[in-house]
Image (cartoon, rainbow, N blue to C red; front, side, top):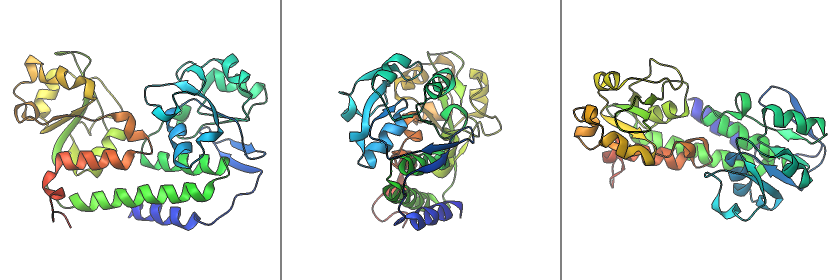
Length: 294
């Protein structure tokens, strides 16, 4: 029901026109006023670059922080340093009228210089799930003077998510663990509840083997064996670490060949519906065969 309401709200916004100045709320709950439509935007987090591209506004971007998750189409833009530690001097030199995705000391210094900064989501711009992605799209769209396009984009993503969930509704829920293991036979970090990974598992028709934990705690290999997930998800680069672990050879996911690579960063992007589709197909391939699930 919540998903359908979100979709309906998004559709109800289509057709509205935002005139400047506009005021939006940031991740601190503070009101940020955008005096006029920005023409020079510096982007410090990949999600914001994706949003602007999807809104047809990539021409507004004049600089970008380095990240492997940046849209490849923007690779030729000037760099302002790594996204976790951007250069204040490089940002200022680009003369932006809006900076997206800054937090901490760099945000404080930019605001002291009178530069408008907008960051959304949880504290420090942390994206906790699909609702935060929708909020980021809507807020960035309004800030860029593209509120109508942002509402349409949010509606399209929401509609696709509802369609995918309908395909797996009522199917048996597989026990899934989303873990990160830096090397074979090392204790993994597990995604518990209140994480984007947990939301993906639930929407794809699974149950989180670590749902009793919160955030990303470190779990022992023995605990993973005890929980015996039927499916294990991890970063594509770490699939081999799990398959090569001597201690994990007997658990269901490894024994049955159901260890899959899912790029978690895509789960906090405008491509979240594509990631959900892939995960749902991995968990319930029968629902996506011709004629299945509908």
